[in-house]
Image (cartoon, rainbow over all chains, first blue to last red; front, side, top):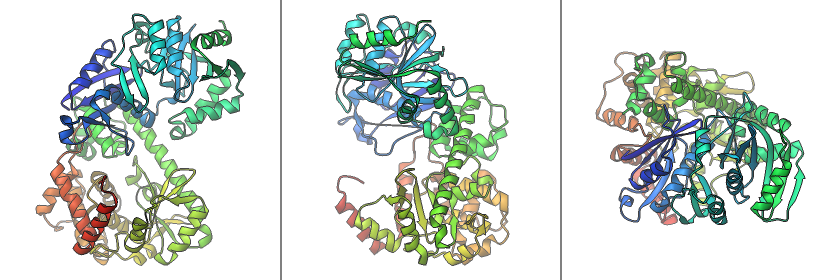
Length: 284
Length: 333
């Protein structure tokens, strides 16, 4: 394609092609410290919806090796979001080497805390706040569980912060590098944050999961132990490829559930959530 | 850069690939043509760079999962339809894996396609709906069109497993010029021993060729042609020509074999005709994919899109059909 970039995030290499120069320049800038893949696993394309839509009311269609039919096009100004969505889609629909859980992950003491929740639960914001307090950021979109070992692999992509999460992150990371502020996206206002150098440097270091959280933002503080059966069902719904992996997915998920305690955590604000997490975290 | 041309070469003779092949372009084109599983099996055991080997192993694993899912879906349909006592013949990808054919190795499988006798359609439809399948197309014109003119029921999707079934009563639309003999297809079908059956080898090739050249716009054509290559290599062509003539499919079958030979080196008898002007266009269309997975050659593609409608119905009917479609959905295609 006219403009292209290859980058590696944890175990996955991506090749991103674009009809426009600007999206590739933005990605190259924000992903400047990431390694290049030996061979990309997936291709993502940002293409003009129609040939003339390169120039006139530029609109991009996100596609790649794996696509959803009828995906809505995005304006050129939201190209970064388009690229991130494209990469997510490749993993969600294509990845088979890991069980993918829609979850953020952070690491401390060589063990991982996984936080699974729907959009708006605060996964990304919590991971960012914890990273500001010394945890290693592993990822804010997918936790990658390796079926053979049960290890959680990092996927420290740009952190996608929404609405209030943007200001919360800016407060705790004064020197943080942000992408452009994206208004009126299908997901509201979005701004991408570059993970810190520690997270990028450790992107090839998997760790054993230790605690599983189901956070929920906006309710009075409450912590409830989640029994394994419930955790299992929640995670089947939070996984993009549980069904596709078949028996391997079942084995990986049941092993994870048996191995770690799970909690549902309601929190009214970030400070409270951090205190809840610290209280639940088993000291080594 | 590698694209569909490299993909066809790799399928034809994987040992001819050089280690400095544009692997990314090859794998991307193969994914776009839904041939990556087939490619992965062709390259199995050959020396390739380590990261390529990982992607190919993943593709084989994915194809195995597709095979298992397809067979399970066939079993679900079998259970729903068994009480009717009708013959149920599996078609296309599901048939290839159910019969353990080379064409099924690594194959992408989407919907479940089955063939049943036309006078059993109503009973089949009722039984499937009772077992949890639902309509996909709510539009009354589409529904009526399918029922009156198509070779299959409107597609049904299972509400829990989210898988589609296409119930055929013949292999080409009733509006098409060619009229294959569905009774003969069912009469010659080979039982699998579990209540399901697959088409006879010659009929499988006839169906694949009909699907490729007498119906549709050649989308996914390279994969269909690879099916034909595998079927011909496995079964040979004894009796194929006579069978194709019986179905009125002599031309598409010969044409399919010519293209399979040209692209994949398929063995075929002498005297099955030489390439004509259309064949050159078909070759352009079959290989219209670049190493980014993008469709190329838009003019050729559009020409085959137009041809697919011309094949499917007579001109006056086509005008009426397009008129209704255009009035109904002015905003979309």
